Length: 168
Image (cartoon, rainbow, N blue to C red; front, side, top):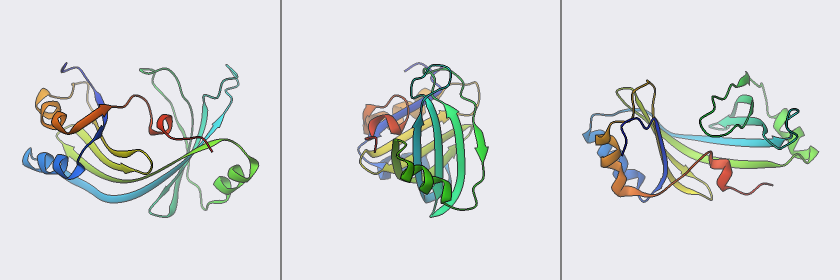
């Protein structure tokens, strides 16, 4: 695989086996079994009229964490987020009641670091086990990392988890 790849996201057969490989490679566990629920509300963009505007309300371990406001653009386009720290669940409840279409992404996430490489091992409800590898620098993901996890990859995912889950 090309060393210039900066991100890899895929369904995998065993997060435990990938975690074992990461440990053997010297990766450091940063957080384990964090439960994260995202309510991703889809709104029309004022520019295009298409449903590319997003309000993502994130809950971490049962507590409101953040509201992200952004537009979904074609792959490779930098996305800029506006971030609000909520004090409670009132906004997500109001949006649900209003009938705004949304996708619910519920997952348990474990995060690893290997040098400048961030690896998320996620159990995503209604999707499966997902491994996500990204480099935090301009360097690509080293071939050794890609080669080590490739035997456990079922198929690559493009875009966001929300693209694979039903709209409510």
